[in-house]
Each structure stands twice: as structure tokens, then as C-alpha cells.
Image 1: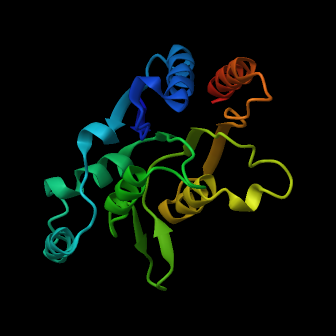
Image 2 (image 1 turned 90 degrees about the vertical axis):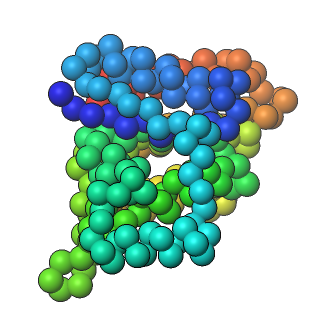
Length: 201
């Protein structure tokens, strides 16, 4: 029985195009893997605090005391233990919403999600075999000359290396705010892509 962690950073809730894409992906994935357990981490509900000075001081004190079983580190423990990670977040300001960045900062804990070997080299400690990033974008940033402006998927892919996650895949539906395009057809094509990706895993 493999554990799938679904990190939901879709701030518009059920109105979100990204969430619609992610839900469809997870439905098809679950149908093909009935023995896998999908657990959702809804960041809008969890309301993790940014690492303000007092939060960071508490975290540092707990970490220094070796109290990694403290509730503060529960998100990091869940992330590290999952065999598969699915993150859904819309494309905002060339990146993703701030609540996802807060989450990523909170789960990046030495000796839980990453560590260092005897040579001082960073090593990943997460169990996940793969990370799937699902997003929708108003513009078309996969087109030639614009890919450098997309920071969200690039950041998550880099973090996979830090966490020791071997495979990163991004499912992105682009151009959804371009009034010259058939948005319904583009979204439908994205749902089909989600199905194909779910069946490949």
C-alpha cells in the first residue's frame, strides 16, 4: 500500500482550473492504483504561518533539542514518508501562490527531508519516487523565448534534487486567459493529458 500526498495550493478552491485538472488526474490515478492511499494536504485549510522570527526561533530550538517528533514538523514528516507527491498550484506572478512557498519552507527540515553525508554533501531523505506538479497558466510560457520567465516548475524540480526525489513531471495547461483561443477546448485537452499521465504512472 503506497502513500500519495496531494498538496493542494489552489487558493480559489473548487472554482480553480488547476484543482479541476488535479482532481481529474487523481481520479484516474486512483482507478489504476486502487491500493494506493491518497491523502490531501489543503494549504488553505492548514494555514501554516510564515517563518516569522518567533516561529523560526521555536523551530530552531526544537530542532537543536532533537525534538523532530514535535507537531511543528508534522508536515515535513508526512512529506518525507510519502511514496508519491502531487502538487497542484496555479501560476501566479511567474511562480506560484505564497502559501505553497510557506509550505515548502516548513517541510525543508534537515534530518527529515534532507541531510548531509560525512563529506558535507547534501543528500535527500524523502521516500518519494516522483513528484507531479499540476498547474494552469494564463499565458503561454512554454513557447520559445518565454520559458526563462517560468519559476514555479523550475523551483520544484530543483527541490526534488534536494529532497532526493528521482523523477519530476509537470502537467501544465497554458494560454487559458488568451481570449483568441478556445479555452474550453484547451482545458479539455489538458484533462486528456492528465488521464494519459495518470495511466503512465
